[in-house]
Amino acid sequence: MPTPLFDDLPPALQRVQTRPLFVLRLDVKPIVVVGETPGPFRRVGIVPSGAFAGDRLSGAVLDGSSDWQTVRSDGSTTLDVRLVLRTDDGVAILMSYRGIRHGPADVIRRLDKGEAVDPARYYFRINPLFEAPTGRYEWLNRVLAVGMGHRFPDGPVYSVFEVL
Image (cartoon, rainbow, N blue to C red):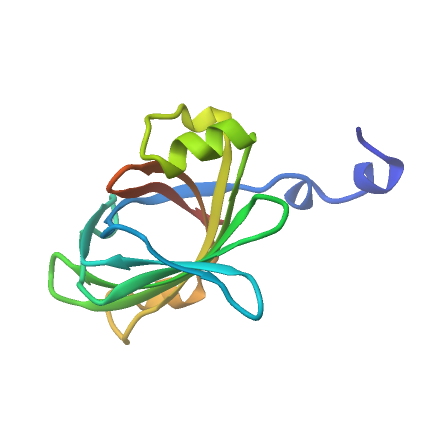
């Protein structure tokens, strides 16, 4: 619902504009359940591989990446992910993101069992940042991105967008 304060903003501040960056698919080994810790309930997904493809960059996800998950008391899961990307032309780029996934309890149970679930039935969003070396991809160092995810039994897929 618009408010007078919102209506007075310049048009550039009234909408978020994005452009596609890439689609990212991660292969994840079976989740390692750490369980209850002195803090939250923890799980870790080891990422041995994956791929990303877009108009401006494409390549592979290198072995050694990981997805540290916190299952919160409200049933949502937060993500803390670190990936190493290698572009098709051989450039290594670091990608990190925080994210959150939540939805109706029955949908989350089905996801946790590896069942097929319509991505419109739950919320799964990430906010990637990049570290790229000087050169062709250094523009990524100045990009904030957002992504929408979907969980398959062997790992997630994300549509990642650059926020303009």
